[in-house]
Length: 212
Image 1 (cartoon, rainbow, N blue to C red):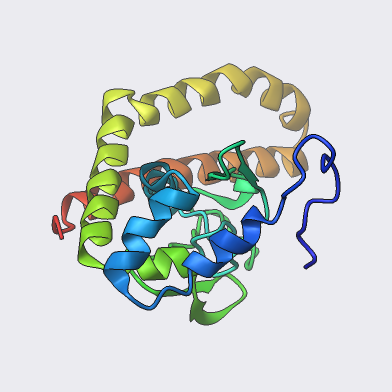
Image 2 (cartoon, rainbow, N blue to C red):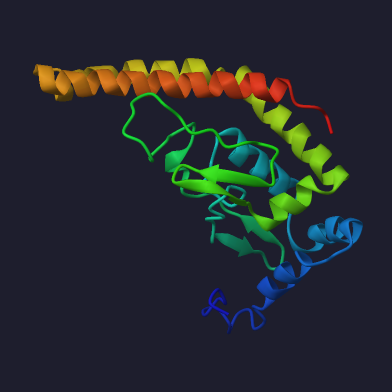
């Protein structure tokens, strides 16, 4: 189809492994589907990938409503890895409004989600299947809690705050010259604080999630 790799066939003649991956997503037996994932990709890495996407509110990624990820690669054994991309609209970024400081929140445990511009749609197929099979859902929830724990242990909020301090002199040079551009600088500060609020809210939300 449109995603068939069209180079490297001389070194690796059979590049139809994508068909095998797609076929596994249509396995109607949930237990068989879950076992089979390990044959076509790194299952634990996939679940962790989806947990991170959801924690940072990556609605424009694979597990979000846009299902917008076409970057996967397979190794010599035909096992696939999802490569994160398009993370420019994460941590609550809401491009649908001109309101400064508002943010868009994508639910972390729902089969459907809105996006900033439209109502709810079904999310990435593997993500939805994971939510509907208890062992996979438990692993996903566990990974969400691990991501939140990592956010705390690495002091992400502190690191973001320090990064803001580092770039502040450059922002002042660029936007602090007159009243018009100073307003833009104030808007940037509001957006920075909005991101910190989003992270803090995510930690509270994940802490309240069940283990299954």
